[in-house]
Amino acid sequence: MKHNLALVGFGVVGQGLVEILIEKAEDLKKRHGFDYSVVAVSDIQKGSVYDEKGLEIQKLLSLVAENGNIEGYPRGIKGWDSLKTITESNADIIVELSFTNIETGEPAMSHFKAAFETGKHLVTTNKGPVALAYKELAEMAEEKGVQFRIEGTVMSGTPVVNLATLCLAGNDIREIRGILNGTTNYILTEMEKGQSYEAALKQAQELGYAEAVPDADVEGWDALAKVLILSNVVMGGALKVSDVEREGITKITLEDIRKAKDAGKRWKLIGQTRKENGSIKAKVSPEMIPTSDPLAGVGGATNALTFDTDLLGQVTVVGAGAGKRETGYSVLTDLLDIHRTLKK
Ligand code: HSE
Image 1 (cartoon, rainbow, N blue to C red):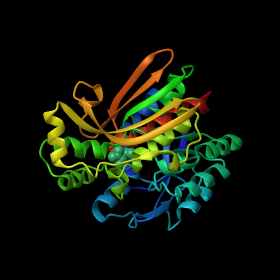
Image 2 (cartoon, rainbow, N blue to C red):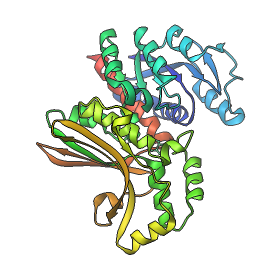
Image 3 (cartoon, protein in one colour):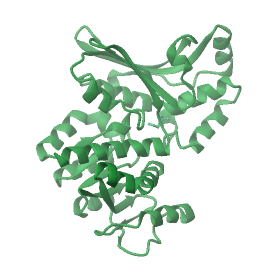
Image 4 (cartoon, rainbow, N blue to C red):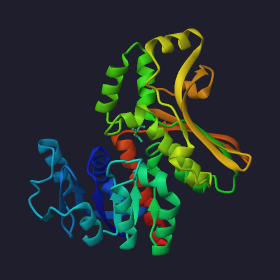
């Protein structure tokens, strides 16, 4: 089965996805019967191109590497904005990778709704709309008979949302707790090696872990968005941003880190959500945990989450939480799942 994909947003994650799609094209066809064309790419900074017969995606990557944009693509229709690309292209799956906005969810919120309205499946790594309005969006997708996939919103391609909603189905998940932000975990790990906060943040940005505005990471907003997603998608809550206590890592000094080390402890930014007296309580805060705690051993941009379940006890998943290919992969896993479902 062949799928026409339109990419809204062609930053680090979009390019990571396209690299993977090129590398794995043969294997995806052979092993999964998954064939694709990328018919459109629309990015607010890099430009927009549409060809209903499919774009030459290696060319798009080269153009971005050479010029920082895709304006010089030799064929196709240029200049369509994101909404026109979503509503008027012949894509059947929209891959929404525009920037995250945790206050309004826009422009991604409008992109999601436009995709559903025009009967297109949607895969996203964009936390904003999912954290703010998952239930409403999921209902809209269901009403329109299309799929809405969000694996990459939490811990990049490491299975979390699909693990919790599909593989752990039937369990009562009582608590989810762990390290949910790669940038801050990377910074804390580097600071423990003696690196300054500023230098570590700069490296995290260069490695593609950090959000466009890194306050989102260091002030705990990114982890908060993920905690909200877990609370509302997995735990069945209806929490809002203001329901989640939040503190980032900006107040942690090298001195604090040294003191923790001397006491056999380590600072981690911990996100948690749990069921308590019939309601869901969630928070994000730095915690000084003993080095014997399994979460203390999770360093760099790696993330980890422990699900406390009634039937299995604790289930922990440790893996990539950010990164170009890691997040690009999250889209692939959702695309393959849509493909499997449509094949039935
Ligand atoms: N900025 C995020 C992080 C990216 O550092 O974890 C993945 O959501």
